[in-house]
Image (cartoon, rainbow, N blue to C red; front, side, top):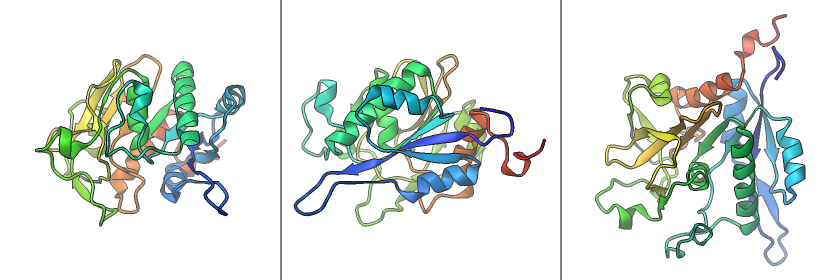
Length: 250
């Protein structure tokens, strides 16, 4: 990225298959690109492509990638049976997301992974998941409320991590809407935040020359706070961004 230029950040789009007379379509929740814009980046939406060479050509023009939330990963692709509570995302999206994550890891493109994006990051890099918190961790607090898309819970950050740099020592409440969670953390990553019940809510990279921060909660949510936006600001700064008001200084 040239000095003074805003970083260009890719966002993976969701995909809905054709059904009856309704044609297939893709979409992105506005909170993702709005948060990138507010943090000083330029968002670019990536459709679920099928050609790896074409994907690599696009990635060569990006400064970072935001891996978005969505439906569940198909556990059969990682060698597990399909849990009865899993509601897999569209096959075309998952095919693309897994290819995208593999290539991004290979070229060490900076990543902000959110929700299902964090789960994809973890399994791609060698970690594992709990498939349904109420069954696997029966003593855990609620992490999902189907009647409230802005369900929130408190967060405990790990000292010395990026999450502590972002949130400091203030009381933290984050938007939570997941039933899956990280079990074994992938090699090269550390836990940077948990909910009070011990469920992992954020991880970050310790791999040389690869900036990655991932959250199970949703800082792009409509109920997010100014502190939540700091996650996007930290990401934009890490990929070489500068504050908007200084971006045009010669």
